[in-house]
View: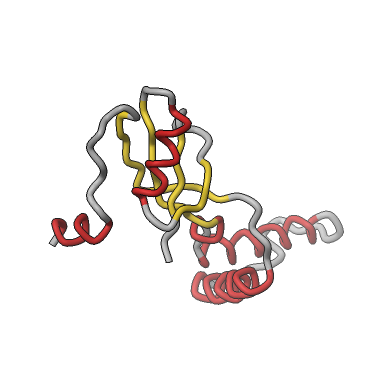
Length: 130
């Protein structure tokens, strides 16, 4: 389920609200006029893709091996499809076992804190996007 947060400076976001409207209301209470930004919370794992994770692991291992093994070329190589498979395994492990201590945001919306107009509901926004 999507969660929402608000910001009064567009840098630090607060809360984990069930709707954008709830986040906006909390932000308006803190904004003292000015602007409130609301956004969807994006967990850290959502920023990672399997191909990049797998390739980074192979690169890191190759660098570690190069401390002990002298070679002109890469010591460890893995095909792109296998790098992606490795990355998927790591991301699956992280989804189950990792504890994420911070999150990012996406789909940021700006609103005036003293504006009485409320945002359309999430259902109304989805309906108008059709």
